[in-house]
Amino acid sequence: MVAAFILGFFLISAAGCTSRQPAGSRAGEEKPVVVRLAGGDWGYPSPYAHCERGPGYYKMLLIFDSLLEKDEGGIIPWLAAKWEVSGERVYTFHLRKNVRWQDGKPFTAGDVVFSWEYARKHPRAWGIDPALVDEVRSLDEHTVRFRLTRPNAAFLYKLAGFPILPAHIWKDVADPYHYTEPRAVVGTGPYRLASYSKEEGAYRFEANRDFWGPKPRVDVIEMVPVEDEALALEQGKIDLAAVPPDLIERFQNKPGCHIAKGPGYWGYRLIFNLNLRPVLRSREFRQVLAFAIDRKELVEKCAQGAALPGNPGILPPDHIWYNPNVPQYRYNLRKAVELLEQLGWYDRDGDGIREDARGNRLAFELLLAQGDARLGKLLKQQLRKAGIELKITSTDPKSRDSLVKQGKYELAVTGEGGWGNDPDYLRERFTRSAKGAGPPVAGGTQGYCNPTVERLAKEQLHETNPVKRRNLVAKLQKALAEDLPELPLYYPTPYYIYRASVYAGWTFMFDHHSLSDAKLSYLASS
Image (cartoon, rainbow, N blue to C red):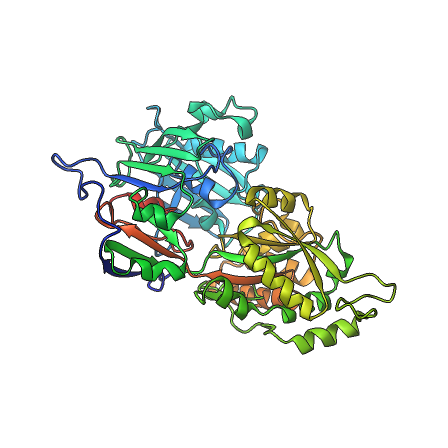
């Protein structure tokens, strides 16, 4: 897994990114390194109380460790110093010694076993499907063995995001989803939660001086509420900002500003509710929508050209498992109209919107977040050319996510990360057999089931030969592109501007788009 394509730095100079404090190492009399980031409420950062989107999850991982971790190149040892694989189903992990929880209690293999058994009883978005693991056993204080029910090609990847809990705290917690006592944020990780304000959407994390691993290079991470990240960066309120591409030029002549360009692992998708609208169960009708939506126009007008058009095979072009040889449904209004008429949809009353033989109008409610109004307007304009009416309902992002989770939508636009994950997320997202294993917000298409997709998704999971698995994942992408359970719209190219005089140690994870989410960004290089 090579990350050479991921990180592009351009050293810029001029006036808006000057230092608000001394930087450098923490040796001698220098002041502590304090990094300020854009905040927002993503829940209490315990393993169960945080919001189920990435910003909540990655805050939690500053406090809690996993057996394995991710850097720019792939999976690396973390709480587990090394491991062996016996056959294809038995994994033995040798844990680091002298690791302690932030309350001083020792970390042991018993905590790993407990964390797994607890997750069986209390599922979470970051969980591993319990049906895939037969047994987890402690062999001694620093050795734990996982026995899988079947070979699992994604097992190590999933462990790299599975937080280990202190058994001595959580064993008596009956309702972890509402457990927000101070002990709920005791981990083994490099940072402690110093303060959290739900009302302000503010967090303060302080370095754990007893951390077992690489020394924290950032003493304090503050996440503060801001309305405009670019403006807040210029005003010295924050030290790293995600900025749209049309603002990059604004910072190119500012001294101390550095620009990082990330991979397209965050994206917009159009999702369909096959349960509410039977017409969406037709593959041909979903193909109509794909032909009628000009994804290149969306890129130009919504992302100022700094994005890649959505791939009907789901995985983005930056993904190392991406298959380019799938149907793309390039914009073709004539083809969309032809398919609509084959399906019996005509404009029977001359008002520009098509009806079926019974006079039912071809109209849908489109649910989206308030900040995506421009995208919704373009989709409405494009689909009207084909005789399809959209009635737009916009709400705040959390309310939209809740409605999507409950299946209370016809069409919806969602934007989220996770597109760089192990390709097993295609199984989690689009198969009924994995229901509940994927993230609830991005948990697939309501009412969708395709036997070919089900079969290929299971086969790729259990195929541990990389060459054979790649072939299966390629076939799975092709099957998804042909069937279109959803339509990826575009993957924006992320740009980050940071104040290097405050801190310059930023790094990406190999599968993720955000600099500030990477735990290793804040730690000394090993």
